[in-house]
Length: 115
Image (tube, rainbow, N blue to C red; front, side, top):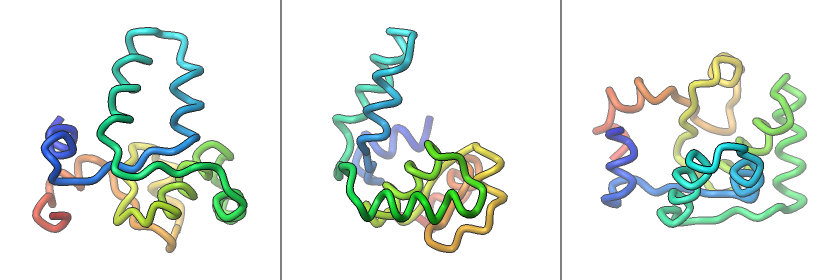
């Protein structure tokens, strides 16, 4: 919740992508869909599909990352994000050098380092 508040108050910048739009559109639960959709308005940057994103996603897939997750990572890289916050253990354990990947607990514990 603290991370979300910090995004809302401009302490951190949120990147959004065409992959997020796709996933939100496929959410069968309208209440969840509406809640997640609201975060698009807080995004500072939007990443559209591009050849560079697809090529980077293929690189991540070569490390064993699933296609959708690889696309999320590639969009974060394209957005030049300082970090990618996830609870996905597969992503957290994969040696990815192109992005700093952190779980939300560790991110929240070290908020000063990210500001």
